[in-house]
Amino acid sequence: MLLTFLGAAGTVTGSKTLVEVEQPVDAAGHRASAAPNRILVDCGMFQGPRDVRSRNWQTFPVDPTSLAGVILTHAHLDHCGYLPALVRDGFDGPVFCSPNTAELVPIILRDSARLQEEDTAWARKKGFSRHADPQPLYDINDAERAIALLRPVEFGTEFRPLDGLTARLDVGGHILGSSIVRLTEESRQRTVVFSGDLGRGNHPLLEPPAPPDHADAIVVESTYGNREHDDVDAEMDEMARAITRTLKRGGTVVIPAFAVDRTEVLLKALRTLQDQQRIPVAPIHVDSPMALAALRIYVRAIQDGDPEINSATAALGPDAIDLPNVHEATTPQDSMALDRGGARIIVSASGMGSGGRVTHHLKALLPDDDNTVLLVGFQAAGTPGRMLLDGAHEIKIHGQYVPVRAEIIEIEAFSVHADASELIDWMRSCRTKPAQVFVNHGEPDAADALAERIRREWDVAVHVPHEGERVRV
Ligand SMILES: [Zn+2]
Image (tube, rainbow, N blue to C red; front, top):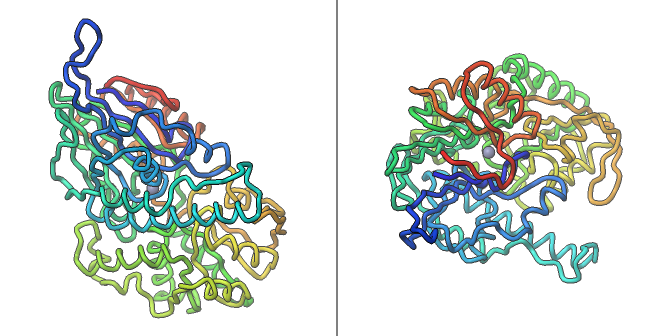
């Protein structure tokens, strides 16, 4: 089996790994069979600074019509967001994923297409594009065609995305629907396990990730490959104190949050803190149409007793995340009304403050020291979230410099990515020691640090592939 790392190498976005099953070649070097022998694991969009995003516009290194299919690990944009571009360029094979991923991906792709169409229209109107006639990466028609290709597969069920290749999805514990992907090349009985984005085992709503079982090679993410998460209880205390003092002084708490999963995890935590009377009960505004759509899917999964939902959450029922003081900001007018400040909590996307409605809230609320911004997720280099974390005194939003006077607090308790020890523990739960580990999906320092720890603590051959690198398993 050959793996080619087409994204998430040296960065945390743009996840795409080409998997090719080797076929016999004749003396002239031609393959014996003309049948497709390749699939893609994940088809993510590059996000973040301009030089990273520009990679979405490069010609895809593989002819999309030569792919037999795509397997998605989960519904985050950096794992599925390039799919409509692949479809626009001719891909029309099946896109395998878990049933809940198939529910969430349409929300993400439609939103992504809409945002790109809006951004392009804006650039055209304002004339600030470097292109005379700016075009979106893809439009809603491409997204709808991609959505029509989704093929849900139950966890633990084997399927064949390709002749000679058996696949299976197991629970990943990162967000609803997230999967560990196991691929076995039938002729040589070689198995590669992709961690996808790996959960922590203590997700407040979801079951922990399944162990890798058996693997000849593991492709492991490294978002937090150089970090250990802080103690969750201490962090919840810090969050409760920050929310309480902000609300007491009449300020607004702005929480930039990924629309899918982070919003649900936050609502569960806010409910717990309210129940324990550790924070005052104040209006909580969920201001993201995408987050609200995802919330309905989580609520339904809880209602239906979905096997991914953990027993504590199932016992609480939908009330676990469906709080009476949650207000839905559905229209842009609802959203704008929140910018007048006051004692309230706003949960809004995107999670790194790099787009979406939260940018407007940051612009309006950062200059006032009554307010607080709670950063609860990974903040990639170059994003407004990272700049706030790094102590910037002003940040540029929509072309304007905005002074930062609000309190900035980082809470890592909500990370739904395993930290370095958790990644290693998960790999070591493998029944057999794999021959190779490939570390991807991390910024260079994180990926290198994790690789070094694996070498030292586990004595396994480990490699950090660079973008475009092809390896044999
Ligand atoms: Zn993810």
